[in-house]
Amino acid sequence: MLALLLAGCAGTPPASKPSDERDGVSAQVPPNLAQLPDAEPRIEAVRSGGPNRPYEALGKRYTPMTGDAPFRERGLASWYGRKFHGRPTASGETYDMHAMTAAHPTLPIPSYARVRNPANGREVIVRVNDRGPFHDGRIVDLSYAAALKLELLRGIAPVELERITFDDIRSGAWRRDGSALAQRAPASSMPNVEVTAPVVPVAAVGAEGSASAPDTLRSPPIAQAAPGFWVQLGAFRQRDGALAFRERVLRELDGLPLAVFEDRSMHRLQAGPYRTRDEATGAAERIRAALQLVPVVVERK
Image (cartoon, rainbow, N blue to C red; front, side):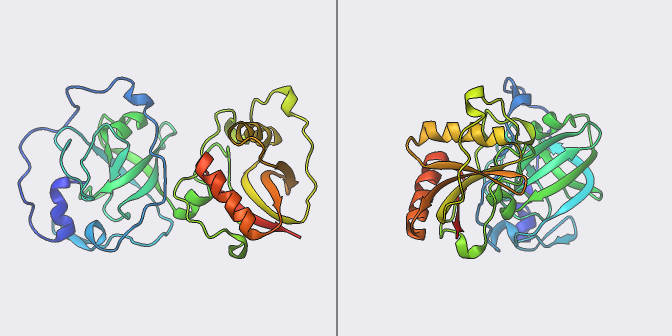
């Protein structure tokens, strides 16, 4: 955290000393801040230099993570507000106390994490773009907005933190509602496309992959597993979720050959079949551009 401890990243004293101003809530809090959406995880490059190189802060040395490794911890959370609002973070970005961000001593910058308040079960997803806190026992400094949503504004409190990995983002597994879990195929069948946007949520799909699909959507033909290459758009625990998503995709991409397959208690929405992998990859590109989701090419023999 401590934008002022960019020094922590550089190993040199701060360029300026913090003022004696007390931290706290800003004079103008945006309306409906408690309804602010969580940060939307996406794959962002992590470089070994800059804010991710080893540094010292308050006499202690830290070595940030640079790999895509899972990370979980429990400890105390604090928050920072108007005293640092508008100042540079360790990433070089400007700190916005009304955005869903956080500071961590060693998580990669940038990265994403889920933070849970075990006292009330509330969870938020934040983007880590700063360094801190540098106090024993504290594991994360939350933005004012994140602390507000977790109901942690009264002071320091225990939290549970879990890093969201690139694999979680690619597959959509970070989503708690299970609305559209893109299934990963073997590497030999994956299209050579790097996608930075996760699977988008479907408004019609509820918790655990359920959906309030109209009766007319409940009995479409279930496709036979024809040989060829298919583009998978998502996998659902409940069939109604797959059918509702199918209708939404058809509204966006009229004429796309879509089918729902039942496979190992999952309902997979796929487009195809395509005769060649190149054709399927081209279709995956068009779907990705139109729907901002993560398509996967699979081969059926």
